[in-house]
Image 1 (spheres, one colour):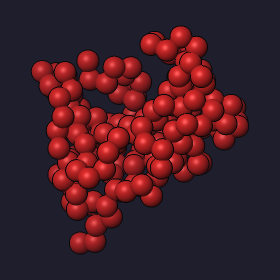
Image 2 (image 1 turned 90 degrees about the vertical axis):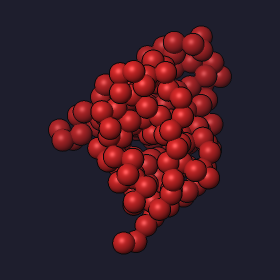
Image 3 (image 1 turned 180 degrees about the vertical axis):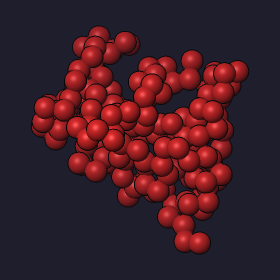
Image 4 (image 1 turned 60 degrees about the horizontal axis):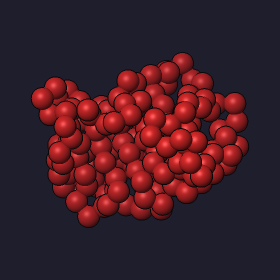
Length: 158
């Protein structure tokens, strides 16, 4: 079978990062990418929440709950969303890329920072979100996508 490795050219969507989709197991993700996924400490192991990183691709992680991928996170500048949003973008740019589809909540740790939450309009996608975290300067520092409730967990697994 053909593999499509995750790389700086992979795009983050509501339900996937490149070929790795929400709902896949780590074994399935390794099979479609041809890459090795390594578990990293998550603090949530006791209740079935784990984090995996991709060997050779920094600043990318996948949350796994009940043995399936439930969210992808990026904090590297060269991976974009399908609409072109990326790390370092301004909150204003995010709002312009997704007009009328961004809700804002105050950031838990950065006074002046925000969680910019993209909610899809399609009924079949109502359980998914893309969430942009911004710092006090209004710049995107992390982007995560995936299913509710996991995509909204502020501190990852803990």
